[in-house]
Image (cartoon, rainbow, N blue to C red; front, side):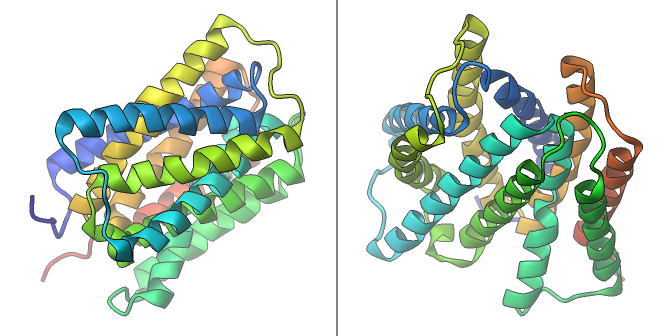
Length: 295
């Protein structure tokens, strides 16, 4: 399938569905934290995803072997993946879904900044500069809000660092030899590298198990199969088919949906400043990634 130069209707529909899927996953991670410690949960998710992906690749006839030139980048992406989810799972353990989501889904802001600096074809137009300023203002506003019960500087900064790692992975998939291998190989390298790292580090973050109930087991199964395996596989496939910034732009849907789901499903109280931060980030990301009109 030839890489597309712009977003089409199928891509928009698929990315919207995936963004909503990720938003719901924020709630699932928060709930699953009642049964498993954050890093142990992330490690179990990666380990389970290894099994699912290996089975999927075998059934689909996808090769397990990658070119030697890709291996260092695959290992680096796996390390970034581990750090991303150490940070995100702990962030969701310390603060609300709404706060962490607004900050975490600022990823396209950091991806656009890195692309502008590192990629010569990414020009900083006035529209993109305005979008960057608005999205950055939204992140600052979210960080400055210290109202509410579940407010933690550590949680906020962990969510921010997780977003930076996610942006780094997206950039690696775009500009390194990783872009030349199938999405399944990209993802298997990340979960295969991250699983032992996360499981080995998990005891350093406290008891591995909390009060494990059936809902926590179902939540873990959802994360392994519907997110870390098939979900991210779909995201990597979309990254190969469409421009990276266009794919990233749809992530503005996720914080909006996450905030609403946190409110509806978890009863979270959302401060006006968080709503304001959400609007700034969403509008900013839209401006960053909107295609210029053809003359």
